Image 1: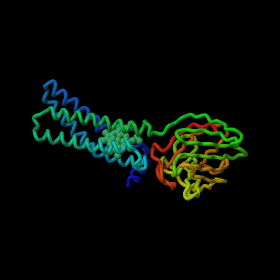
Image 2: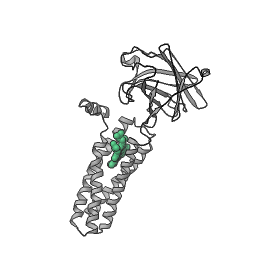
Image 3: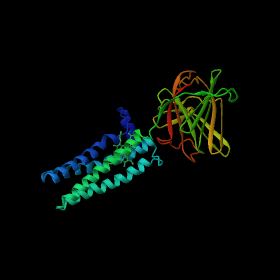
Image 4: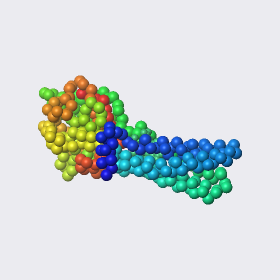
Length: 310
Ligand code: HEM
């Protein structure tokens, strides 16, 4: 149902989260409601209580669609990930906001003659929407947001086989280019899946993705392609070929490593053609503990995006 909704929006070119469009209709009126209550209270302008109350009603009405699309945005863009502390906080805050706005409306209706309570309730709503905005901002721009960092690779010594290597945020990525192909090793401290994506934009859509996990000593490593902002599919399911010429993996000391080899030019029309010395956007991701499958969502905090010169 929600997917159909986003597909319809996508048809008119709207592919962004919908929640940010509506939040203004809760945040603005809630803060303005406090300002009018404060003017009424401190400057003895009783008419402004009415304005304050009307603004509270607007915030209350828009609470419903805002929370509803917040939840479906979370499901659609963040896979409903329950590793997101920001979402847990927002759910609690949204519940409290409901009570504060509803309480304010009810007290006013009951002819509440103690405007201090109304003032305090509008203040509580203002603080609450500020916190909701803060945690929302944390999702979009904070530590949960994907990072983009320029990294310089070190060429390790000949003993290690001339691999270039970089370490970032717990990921250890090493690669070697020779004879028109690339060997890749990716390690992360998890018993779940780890993934590597490469392309020109850093978005999953359009990136060539290889991901895998190790279970009972056996590595499962697959060649995928990013078919959407949050979806990837095995190459073989989208009419392309699996171009890994070698694949493997291990789980040692709590760390999963996947290894694979593929041609720089896989011949699949959508895969980026890799060129030594050129900079690509590399996505490194993990599915978290126990994600021994290739579907568990990584959430926003489970991936980083790097500019890597091959
Ligand atoms: C009325 C209550 C809420 C308000 C006022 C609010 C406010 C905000 C704000 C200000 C942002 C930042 C938007 C941006 O910087 O682009 C945000 C983002 C977000 N919020 Fe809420 N929020 C509310 C409730 C919820 C709830 C209940 C959920 C889901 C459980 C939710 C999920 C999200 C998500 C997923 C984002 C990130 C959207 C993106 O990727 O652009 N919000 N919210």
